Image 1: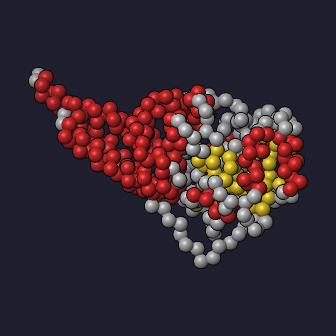
Image 2 (image 1 turned 180 degrees about the vertical axis):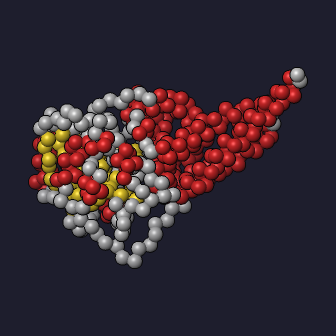
Image 3 (image 1 turned 135 degrees about the horizontal axis):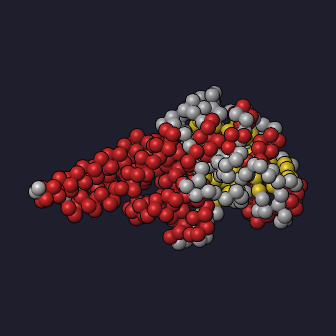
Length: 377
């Protein structure tokens, strides 16, 4: 047996595998992610203002309520709307802060929950109560630790409703802070949004984020709310959307004025716990969604190890050429998409983030199999 010839065939196979992985990556960037990068809102002959019920669930979040709720209450929206805060068994000063704000903002509705829903995990029960209490057909969801990026958040989100629209997916970003951890959190958030927004634009919506999500009350009631996922911690946003969204009833809003901003975690361990909770629901996605997400993640994970092997043992010139094609495409798509989502300051570090994703998958992949915490707060 000619071992030299065998090794040559082996490294040639590695190079072709590297090319295949690169081709998969290019497909996702061209077919999916370019839709966010080059997104343009379709012009409407007339714009209608719909009555809107904004719903926020909070448990022991008096500081967040005091800091962020005024940003929701001062929205410039001339049509009928209400803001419902479901105060879920809080033992802090939330009740008193809400009552003080209600004196100024009469459209603020407070729902005080005094009992736990023992058999319903996460925040599904308080959110269900808030939706049932809503007076209007369109409900707009955010969290107590979120604040709209502008005074036109309600206007921009509800404007996406046209005939046949039942679900509107927005972008929930994180505040910009000094430090590497902040940039890692924000890049991961951008990267996730690039996926769920572009998939929805391609007619394959699979999730939304509760920090910035809207749907009609009827679609919630018609699908019996969260009854099919009440036993699963979390999932009140992504699993519900995964179940009820389709290419016909879902639209996205990509507009800097329609973004919500949250406070990012301050330590890596806190972020790890948060992402563990978020990713634990992905196992319940539809099979087609899981396949597309897994194929992209696997190709991204294998990309740099295969590049290094091909460059060292086959042809560094060819391997570098393939790498260059993919990086140029990625840089261009990222730049355009980051500008759309107001994350352009991350772009100079895109190569670092791209390499970081290899380690990210190693750290966070176990979250797909871990049993999540029951608490939603």
